[in-house]
Amino acid sequence: MADETWLKIENPMFAFVSAFVDELARSGLTDVVVCPGSRSTPLAYGFAGNSKIKIWMEYDERSAGFFALGLAKATRRTVALVCTSGTAAANFMPAVVEAKMGRVPLIVITADRPAELRDNGAPQAIDQLKLYGSYAKWYAEMPLPEASNEMLRFARTQAGRAFGVANAAPAGPVHINQPFREPLTPPPIAGQPLLPESQRDPVAWAGRPNGQPYVELKQAPRRLHPAEIGPLSLTLKGIEKGLIIVGPQDDPSLALAVAGLAKKLGYPVLADPLSGLRAGPHDREYFISTYDAFLRDGRFTTGDDFAPEVILRFGAMPTAKPLLLFLKRFPNLPQFLVDGGDGWNEPTQLAQTVYHADPALFCQDLAASLPPKSFKSGWLRGWLECAHATAAALENALSNLPELFEGRVLASMADLLPDGSTLFVGNSMPVRDLDSFFAGSPKNIRLLCNRGANGIDGVVSSALGVAAAGQGPLVLVIGDLSTYHDLNGLLAAKLHQLNATIVILNNDGGGIFSFLPQAGFPHNFEQLFGTPHGLDFEPVMQMYGAKFDRIHDWPGFESALQTALQQDGLKVIEVPTNREHNVTMHRQMWAAVYQALAATGDKAVAR
Ligand SMILES: Cc1ncc(C[n+]2csc(CCOP(=O)(O)OP(=O)(O)O)c2C)c(N)n1
Image (tube, rainbow, N blue to C red; front, side, top):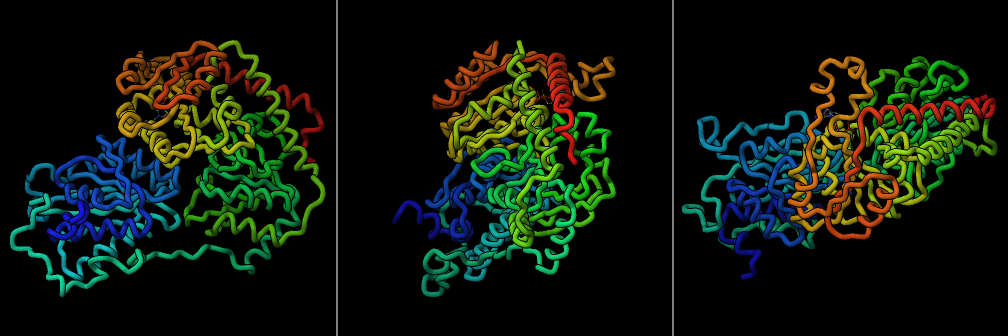
């Protein structure tokens, strides 16, 4: 008997679990992140017995959840997560929240005690029913495993359904709670003989022929009816001063579709760093990436030259605060929001119409209904002029800085990262600096961040999950508190021999708070917000087998990053910075932009 089949055949519990796992594989699951534990033994064996699914062992459930999230993000495929009963399951919560809000497909399978060991003081037993509340897209309490024809069909159905629901737009996490009664290891359970071969329904036991899934969930693409496109197209055709805004989203086909629509409409496109629009070989002529800087200028905060008459929005709410403030200045113009995942990403309360339609198809259909536009309007030229002037001013100001600057680290990634790499950024200032300073690149550089719930937790693990996908060089730029928060996550690099470069922007505390109004109240600021820790990361990084490099000047950073990108394994580059200087230098950057805009005079006026 082959190694893998002894689990499946000898024991009803394993026949049930194997059917479930087999069905996940048939549905398309390729990766599972498993955390150690006893109650989850049948699941662990079940996955180990399936050669189509790769097991990633992770030892800390909080990190494991984020590792699975990163792997799912990178591959754009569903990843399963398995843990034992008790607080192990509770530790998946932050990643489940991020997966729900960031629309990342996960199948979370928690092992549980049977009914007689619940709510009565049995060890390692907590209430796991609907543990993740509204953060699970779908929840199923499974029965105790049973190897009848009917129950094996049920196991297959639940697996297929879990996979289908996790993937269906909006993608997200599903939760399966699976009780097991002892014994949990393979020997046949007394009193539970397997069904005689002759009575076995072949599909229930071995699945549908030719490896087909038992059940599939098919979702029709959401496409607007021509009767809706027509009037919208007519409205937009008559409006010259339009803006397209693309927030965080993950459809790689949207960039081209938006570029096509923007050309037909003659509208500039404000592209969030997480929109997938800023980097890539697609046409970026109308895409603007420097708006976080120039929207702070008076001509946008109070002037009327750039007042739009219509707004078309795609993706989640953009990262840039100046953009939010700009939008709020124009509450009564038509604002159309397109959400392919039935969501309501509209915290401004300004939308006039929310379209639940596939964004790329929406752009294509709308573009097809519009005539070609052969000239650039004054409106469009004005916006593009601001963008170009800002990009040049920032480039100049950044290269003249005498000290290390966090923003320059993010700006430099466009040049330093090779084609095909992924840049993962932490929340707090890294994602904001990415927004402000990563101007764009014709290279394929994928920009990722956990922007669903904006947590500073699990960032290291998420990035290492991306590295595990093996899709090219992975660089993580992260703050020091976020690094500290997920030190446990570093083990993944050692366990799975991952190649990754982590750049820690170490300003000894939460640098973002120095930009907030709290900084104006110095009493207790350091204690409550600045939160310095004085940690030396070097010995910790050595513990995890990382190469560590603390750099002190800009040439040192560039050469350290270039070296790191050539090396295998985990490389950590620490960039020491100062929170107060960081604020001053950001203000210098904005001042350079204001000056450059003033110098453009009439050219940067949208008429
Ligand atoms: C899990 C979690 N806890 C707390 C916060 C609140 N928070 C936002 S930014 C921040 C400071 C982050 O510091 P660091 O990672 O060093 O980045 P920096 O602010 O220096 O850019 C904190 C505590 C959060 N977003 N998520």
